[in-house]
Length: 187
Image 1 (cartoon, one colour):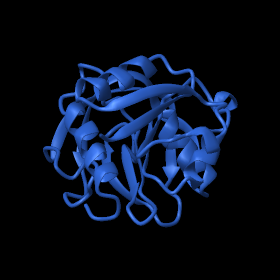
Image 2 (image 1 turned 90 degrees about the vertical axis):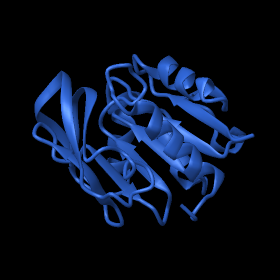
Image 3 (image 1 turned 120 degrees about the vertical axis):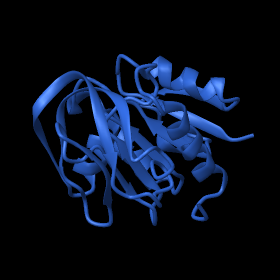
């Protein structure tokens, strides 16, 4: 059975990310973001959202574990910031129902979604520039980088919250991440 660890970056929706995975029949648990990387035994990691970069603990160390990583909201931002991208205040930020446009229909994380899909956003900062090796895979009128992927390193991120009911195809995003974890570097 696939095992996914949800790293708690003190976000308001961390428990919902855990529940979304559990509801898909996945062996999952929430771990504190100060957990030493050597103690993580998983097929994939979800880096949860959170209030700010000052509370990410050891999350950036998990990017070197050679297993797929999926960053949600702050989780995506910390991947970008750590790997040379640029993160900064968004022009619109806050809570919003957003229409996202999928830019890469072949992307293993978001490519199977409808060309336009409704999502729930909750953020003040955003990825301004994706790091080298990443491709922007989704955009919106309020956030230029709604999703990004580096399929070679199996690092993925979305700015929105797939774990909340307001996101139309959130379950599909988690199912796609599970497929990535079950068949690394083959999807």
